[in-house]
Length: 634
Image 1 (tube, rainbow, N blue to C red):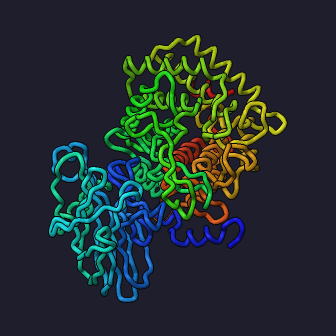
Image 2: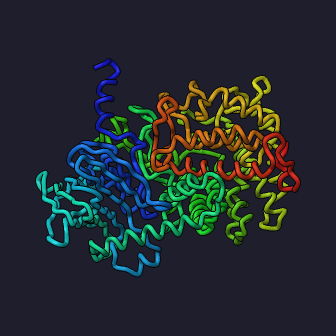
Image 3: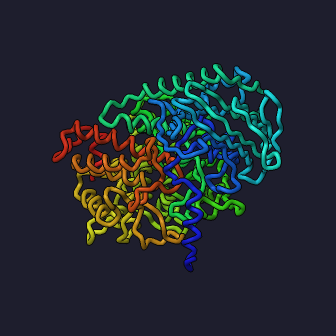
């Protein structure tokens, strides 16, 4: 073995599918990841940040899985059934072909309350398509992140039952299963012929007694109802541009990451997938960040999903009231503010990438940019016809006062660095955004704020940013005041209207970022030598790459923006999903998967391309004609 342990890492990596080999299923409460070989390797219940039931994703040996696949050689192809989140994997074997369809049946909140159905169900349909195929089923529930190996209890037609932290897990199968591993696993081997269709149903119930779902034709009915529900939802998408397939798939992925009871959107349904194989940049993303609240509202509302946009806005106001007049950067799906980080040393980590973390200590950081995000999101909500009540008026005004009091302070910045606090240009500009939007809403009669105080601070922030956040020598806005480092977050300045994309300062900033941070359209967060308090090693960031598309388009270069966008689309996996990061050398997915913010970035980039094509770009973007647009120019 080499001194750095690389041979051992390669051996471990061979036991793990690539991150991009996974597809997501869910019911807008919890979610699971299914590998390209039909293995459910990650499932947290009863919600995204709950303890896992299967965690082979983070420990192939002892994490637990629920796998269905042929016993012999096979090739695979997969897709989501058109405009749904029902996953179909087709196994091609020498003796025949087989389809595996995976889903979590969906229902409205009213239907959930009115029925005796279990709280959640994973439904798996196996269908013989041609010939005859021998398949194996392996069921290894390992609740509480693999720390529990429950005994399985055979209950005849009622299936296999075990306990998971006070909840009942029940597996019913039309394929015969026998207990193995001392009664803590189940396995079955069976031949399936063309035309045969069998079902397996895993249910979770904790809150109240539940009726075990019927299999057979009733299970087929649940699959068809779920597929129809997803198609009806997807058909509401208002985007009709040239990238509709990618936009609708991104919308469907986002919907899977919305926690329906509260309207919150988690950053990703996974924890601790590494930003570099074998590295330590492994974080828990099963929480809700405020840093992209504005772009989330834009994506949902513009696509025509007003109900989801309103629910997200409502969750945001609820969560932020719990820490008002200060804001945290992340909360859980119910708005809980304390999310202490801890490590799970018993788990190997994805391909040996340790530590595995649950919780996220970034909740205690100071990130001033979130004030701009929250206020701009509220302004977008109002622009779409939303109304602000007296309590919300008071809350937003209080956030503005906090900005006036704190904008001169250093902070950890948008990337949650762990090397201390600095005067980040992006954070200051977003403080400007917060006050600017409050002033505009005041002037439009939508709310009342101490407008003179806010105007004075807004103007002072702009003067500071332009004097200390722009480096004349290199011709660019910079990561920190009086610095010379590039940072991809600066690409958002025209997205928030701080500066026009066609302004010389912004065009040159965009050019410098592409020179220093970009490779073939993929954009890193910041330069390699930047000290963020952690060992180096990460891929290019998906959302930064889509920001670059928007920045190019808003700068008038729609042709280059379009070419970059289309190149970025090629980095999606085979079912259209994006991770947090992309390895520019291999194109491999890195980091937590799938990543909501990357898909939000894709949607907004597609919307911006449409908008700027209509303006007659490239060359000369349409000049601002309203007071709302004129204030954005320096």
